[in-house]
Image 1: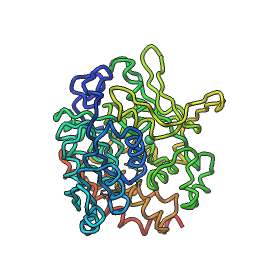
Image 2: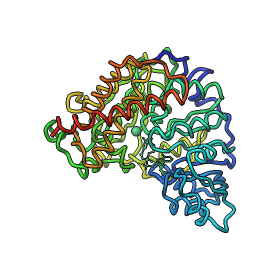
Image 3: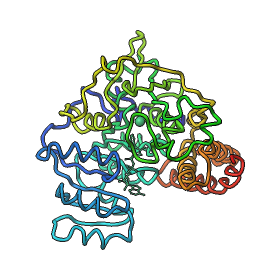
Length: 419
Ligand code: NAD
Ligand code: MG
């Protein structure tokens, strides 16, 4: 991990707040949802829908689905709606004609949405495209529920330092990190031994390497427990998602790679655990429903009434745990390697994986080649001597672009090797 200012849950400099630092009023708050039409966006809108008097929607954004964005903007009487595709401004304006909602299009409009004065921002754009909008919310000191893990994976040190500097409050919305956030308050930094994030193991948990290698898109999209967007579902099948989450935890809570363990837990009931020096292990549990961590972020520092199902442990009967298999799921090992390397390696890991997943969806490479492409891109980047600390969003975006181009160049030979 690259050297970072100590940013931790129990320290004044932290962008991730202490449970006891209750500063946010529980009265009505203005909210913005970046990526409102996605899976996390959908869960967030569902929670807002349940308490319409409690929230005023400032801004909503989407990539290209004008109809879905306009529908939400009308329903929630949003002040501003932004579509990332610059060619769709007129369509959005037409769809919102007669409403008081202002419209914008292009990347700058998504950033404007994040810059507008909402108390609470859900950062749920998918991929590296989420970095600049999330930073815009961070820079004005907002409370940011962070679902977009790529912000941390691409530019973790820098992102957390900017958040601390601006006095922004980062609330982890990813279920495992939200679990850690809830458990970490039970002790102090010097008492922490390690954190454990759980992984369902995905649809290929029990499959042999040769079968994983040949898995189809339909098989990869059949997640046993969670209902999520397409990209993250494929990442769960490859366990790249857990790799991204190890990196995410490291930056979010300023933890060394050795302080983060992964445990396969097929039932997805225990989401994260923290072990302290007295050997107490504090865990957060709940049914696998993203509305639980999102509700925790939305209510924080209080708790709101959530719509999710009650956890019935007697009905579930058994919770089981397994050590992850780094051989069958090399993407997880590569994440630890990238984290130890630092200086942009985690951004390369993420970019190469995004290229690999897109190629897999397009039928250009086999499932087993996803990790192969990430490894080849990381190796090439190590040889290039381009490693350096990332000190701006543009630095991170440059590394992201270089890695994407390199991954695209390496793609044909990896595709040929895997077939
Ligand atoms: P999704 O693909 O379902 O939705 C993505 C959203 O971002 C959509 O609203 C889309 O319109 C928007 N978007 C996509 N590309 C964009 C671009 N270039 N510019 C602007 N907007 C763009 O994704 P998701 O599953 O909701 O995941 C969102 C983020 O949350 C990801 O970073 C993911 O890793 C993270 N996350 C998701 C889950 C989950 O359960 N889905 C859990 C934990 C973390
Ligand atoms: Mg997660």
